[in-house]
Amino acid sequence: MTIVWLVIVIALAVIEVMTVNLVTVWFVASGIVALIAAYLGASTIIQLAIFVILGVLLLLLTKKPLEKLLNKTNKHKTNLDRIFEMEGIVTEEIKKGSTGEVKVDGKRWTAIADKTIKKDSTVKILKIDGVKLVVEEV
Image 1 (cartoon, rainbow, N blue to C red):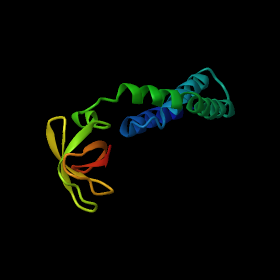
Image 2 (spheres, one colour):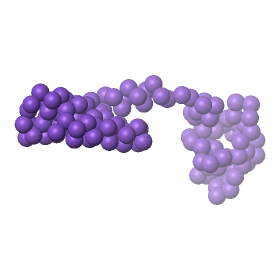
Image 3 (cartoon, one colour):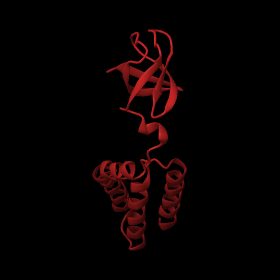
């Protein structure tokens, strides 16, 4: 049975490396523990119980905190992220259903809005839709 556990652990590790979504890493760990149990002579039922119970427990107890930690450390701001929540000046009137132009952080951007905004008005950047800024008047 040790060979079976070894194959399972390797297969799950390969799946984890290919997906990189923290899908099977807990079952790799529980598979290693089941492999050790098999090596020590535990019955097949105990090995399966260790694999399933430990895998589910590890998944439930560590997935959320680990995802939070990974998301926090992997978040790098780009130049585009800087302009969110910034204010800009309308340099070309933005008409509802049509584009206009906004100057933000020294750069000119094509902008759209839910309503008409006059030239020289101050706007707040809500998001980026493709290559256009979505703005609202301040």
